[in-house]
Image (cartoon, rainbow, N blue to C red; front, side, top):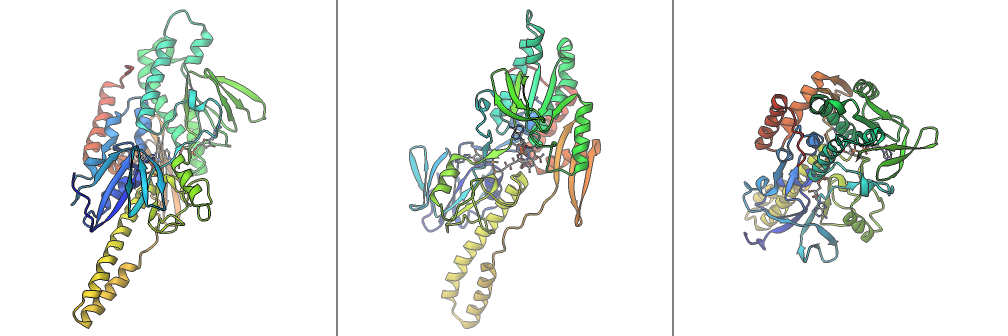
Length: 447
Ligand code: FAD
Ligand code: NAD
């Protein structure tokens, strides 16, 4: 590996998700030593992850090694596949496994973890949907339920339980998973398991008044009516209170308790702060006062520090925790670092200027690069797949918003995601997966 250049400042980047990867793509390594630390040595394109739970898309089509992303940089980026377990703001070091790494600048893009609200049994019996292994686990568990239900000599109640797939959380993750499961059932399972297919049920449980609270009213109604047509049962105003091995305990809208038996339980109730971030917040009690995430200023600098920056789902900002926000922040921060490097360079050049005219010109340039604009988010719209080749989209238009839903929106959804994929390699793989699914159907083998 290339040596760290002691004449340049070292940026340690935590994470290889949307925020950190977008930063890595744009950072100019001529000016900095860059070191990446992440327990995953790849980037994952999360928007299409629900498609991996039923085999519409292969997980390998959505991932990209960090080393592949940084291979064209002018100077080598070091990558350590490790989890950062501690950040020491006094010594400016981070801890990974058995060693420590020193930083001049730290970029925190570690994302968030799955929210359980401390509800009993969720960790033990539920399946999350955030990482590659979650999608693989769901796919395997689903086929396990179906194959077990196909086994002879079981009571009708047990078969119904095994074939009841329950999704908790009516945000976009829960909705997109339910939609993919519905498609798998209609397109593939009904022909492979004709005697069981009619008994497979999908239920979505949501604590609030309706699904997808972030979308416009018209699209919420459209999604709910599409789910009704698809025989996906929706229980809104229903709060899950406990998860047991074979059923969940819920509080119904009238406040009374009920139990719902399930075979597969997918838990999609959003994000919470990672322990690493909680510890960092505890270290800076005067400036970090929100438990939801790290507080940053308008330049993404961690409040209470000079050399730490944070972005993406690890932060608590006015923006929703989305890939769109994280990616724009990553790109912005790389530009900010470029300006910081230029400042240092010009500062030296001003001192070395041989004539007054040269000095004035350099100083003018310096003033320009010192004027770093704050981060500004540009919302490109919200999209969500709702099954049966239909998607919904809330898109900004002028000062307002345009809402659309249906098959044409699905074509737009597909093209938007294809163009947002990080590499042409991923694009080719995803398009091939879609073609394979159309021609050959999805695979029902349990790996
Ligand atoms: P992440 O992408 O979660 O990345 C965090 C990184 O940090 C990972 O590489 C992780 O391994 C690493 N890490 C974790 N702990 C440590 C540690 N201790 N030390 C070092 N590294 C660590 N958003 C949209 O805008 N559009 C969508 O369509 C969309 N679809 C989604 C679908 C699903 C199924 C999910 C789960 C999310 C979706 N999102 C979508 C939300 C989006 O994925 C997140 O907002 C985005 O991933 C946040 O980016 P991030 O870089 O902050 O975190
Ligand atoms: P979310 O926070 O958007 O939704 C979670 C839902 O779970 C909420 O509606 C909440 O009321 C419900 N809930 C919480 N506790 C519950 C309980 N005990 N019982 C029943 N329901 C309960 O979470 P998400 O869907 O995982 O999304 C996380 C983030 O990722 C969001 O910012 C979202 O916009 C983004 N995302 C976007 C897309 C997309 O754009 N297509 C897809 C997935 C995720």
